[in-house]
Amino acid sequence: MNPRESNGAEEVGLYVFCFTRASAVEAVVGLGFAGGEPLEVQVHGEIAAICCEVPLQEWTGEAGEAHLKELAWLGPRALRHEEVIEQMMRASPVLPLRFGCLFSSRARLVELLEREQARISAFIEKVAHEEEWSLQGWLDLKVCEEAMFAADPRVAKLPASGGTRYLMEQKLRKEAARAARAWVPEAEAMIARALEGVVLERRSLRPPSRSAENPALEGALHWAILVPRGAEAELAKRLEPLVEQLLARGLHLSARGPWPAYNFAPHIGSESGDTTPEQSLG
Figure 1 (tube, rainbow, N blue to C red):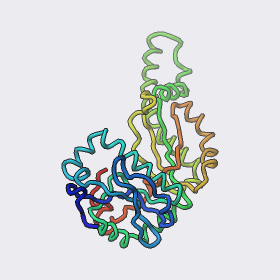
Figure 2: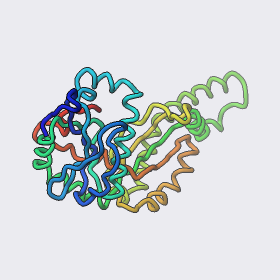
Figure 3: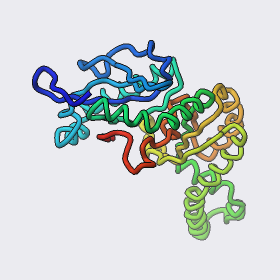
Figure 4: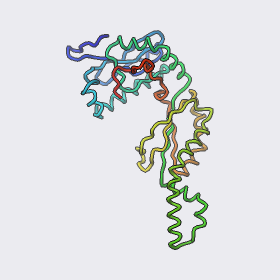
């Protein structure tokens, strides 16, 4: 498909959500984006690109840049992007693409499918047996500092009262504050050891600065982990003994999933120096 005019006015491109097995085409139902064109499939051999037509002028150039800063426009589309991928996950393993993968023509998409068929197929077969989970840790810094202070053996030797006690206690509390910050990598090492043998791959991501649910909690760690499919019970079993121990020092740990394997997907097209989408908007 060359860029064409829709209703005599707009050029359209192809927005691609993910790649799947070609056998999953029956699961492709519904619209790409609200008020837009239906989902469709571009099949190449044993793989398929799940896509839809979109107006190029909404996604590219100055208008596209402006839309990315407009939550009312961006939010529903980003949510629909995730919904389509999760819909396809129920029918086939997927190679998920980041939000904003846009091709100016069907021919350009076919070129990529021809060039990258082997890598796409290999990843799809890999995640048929594996799945991504998110592991996050939120730190209550005050609780952590108090736990560090209480665990310091010098606290028990402080004078019972008076100015000397106050000065010495303030010194120990400052040291406890520094120790609390330095403790997070130690906690990460504990978690890593506990998950040995169940985590196949791990990616360290930047945690949010604060918890949206409890602003008193700081983002301390955020891992994307790849585990064998069906390992949820084993993952919970490994983490359970740690949760209470870490919570006593103010670290709230949670595991969520499974998710599309965004953080382990190959950068399709990167070996030849180009990018997966002709237009990347995110």
